[in-house]
Length: 394
Image (cartoon, rainbow, N blue to C red):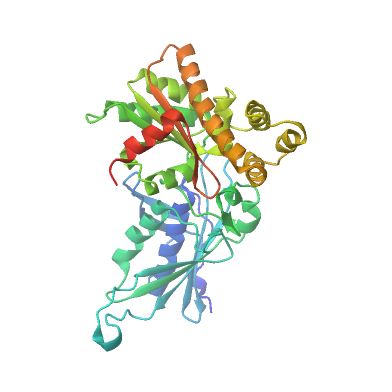
């Protein structure tokens, strides 16, 4: 049953424009929790954003009892100015209390406490093809814990079910499947505010973030430029220190020049093979609306490795770089491995030449490429050594 007083009229965003999906997820979850706590409905939800660390008011569209112990919180994504897939995306979070945690196993043996918050993927939420778990970034989970755990009564545990009604359809317009995410949109994002990777103001924000990094007292000349959200989520899991990471959108050229000019001496490019291959063709703005050429670059490098005839034509006609390399690997694993290595080495060489043309030669540039399964598939001659050096002892 729905109580009328829990429904809200749409409100105009105040300081909400430009928030990423994890923020709207956390706001919907907090609104649902407020219903369970029998608190009056509030059209704006105060959230701790963490990155950057500040308190913000995020609009909530509705909150209600659903029956059978479930409560619902609803938000609607507003990513701010610029193009963004999540604009107008409705987020539902269903919440209910779980049974209290038992602190003893069979025979009274102590066991690890069950998690206070359990999250499951509902309709429209992307899950990992390998395992079926919800695809949730570390930041999204931290945001939920920071805003929900302090409000849980002692001994209470919370179950959350996330539903994105339009998520399955919108996911068809993303590269989620290329990273092993199926059935809907991934709940990813590494900070509170949206950054439009192709917009000029994104370049200015990235350059400002780079300048801050270069000015830090402990800066020693090492930097990892990470291409995209998937790379930024993956890099720390592979042992790359977060302090070295800087996310870079499609404006790679100016960022590379500014980094080398500002004192970066060892620079690792870390990104998806279907994106970084553009650098091997001398394309240093990587948004597909401006330039592509991936098929041509892939084919040219494959020809240099000895591929020809019908096999080369088949590679050229592949739907994606990922698909082309996968097909080649099935037919000739050794050749596919050599081709990946040539791609990474060419990325390094073309990047070095690009910096030299802009008068900032001197930085050691390496490249590491991963595939849709988030496996490292290629390391350039420099990239392999930088990856091991930056990872440090294991």
